[in-house]
Amino acid sequence: MISSAAGGHRPAALRLFRRRWPHPVYWWAAILALILLCAALGPELWTTDPNRTNLLNRFAGPSFEHPLGTDGFGRDLLARLLHGARLSLVSAAIVIVCSTFLGLVVGSLAAVIGGIVDTLAARLVDGLLALPALVVALGLIGVFGTGWTTLVFALTATGWPWYARIYRSLVIAERQKPYVTAARAIGAGTLRIAVRHLGPNIAGPVAVVAATDLGATILGLAAFSFLGLGVAPPTPEWGAMVAEGRQHFQSHPWVIVAPGLAITVTVIVVNLFSDALRDAADPFRRR
Image (cartoon, rainbow, N blue to C red; front, side, top):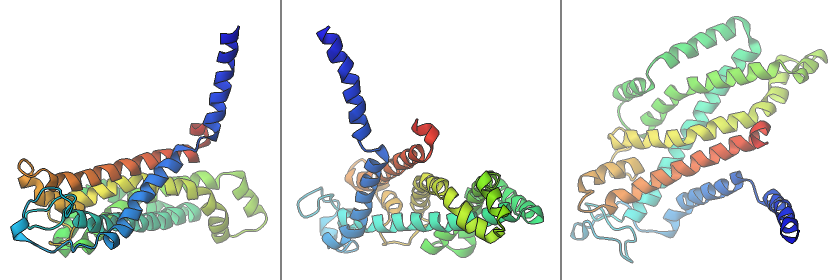
């Protein structure tokens, strides 16, 4: 009886503990915030010049002076990693924000206005999505030249149609709900319904979609930089750092391990955060 009573109380205590334990979205958000904090403040705390060369100190192993070692030009890898974090994360954020804005504007206007506008916008998005995104991005880079601005423009140009299709579907589903009908009944115009009613109700799914695509955008930027289509040397960037160290991986593995781990950890944290955010925003998944 004692064991059964103790066993009977244990699940209740565990349930209470689980109720008080924060949702995983807070944990992953805290880790992601720590990564962003390192990118924002790291170069200010570790003030070594990321582009300062020292050929007498090439491929130096990790030490107190260079915690992550040096590369083939004697440059400090920690300094380059921290400065590269700023460029990689800011570039990914710009691509996501621009793609989300364009997709939200086109998709929402098409769904709210309807009629011929919706038909034309839907056909435009379908036509753009039918084109291979990688080929289009490479074509844009070939036309406008390599560089950070061109890379961000190419990824935005190939990414916003996907957002437009998703947000159009969200708005179409929302405009059929009773609160939109009630707003129309009291004389609210199309713009007021879109801004005051539809906007706040699709904000959660919009944030989830943007967070879900952030990890893929970071990988895409790193991949183009790895191919030499991103920032120009000697600007530090994670993908470019991996490309610079790939020939020396067997003899000096720290040259490629540091940026490779930075990309891997950041993408994993972003993906886990987006999954937790989706679970928190969806009441059915939360149950």
